[in-house]
Image (cartoon, rainbow, N blue to C red; front, side):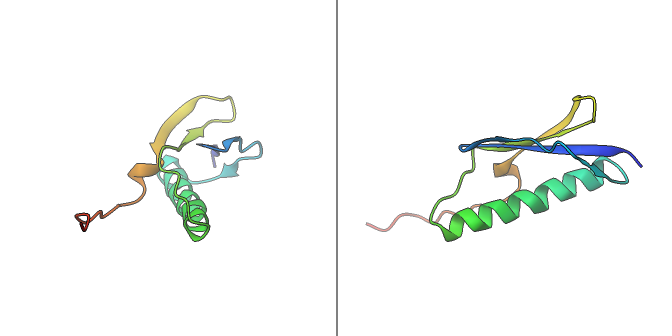
Length: 84
């Protein structure tokens, strides 16, 4: 199975996945990235913040970036009209 590295980039900095994971393919790597980011965002939300400008890079062991997914692509934000 191929190995994928999921690197997280947010306002805190970059967290590189040095070890990586053996997964069936890019689709499974994308799913793992989404699950991981949603977990990070849920923890941030509990602390009162939400870092949507971040992104993850899914890369090969050689460092080739196969896919970049922005945090804002991983969640839906429903913003109602502001009350006056």
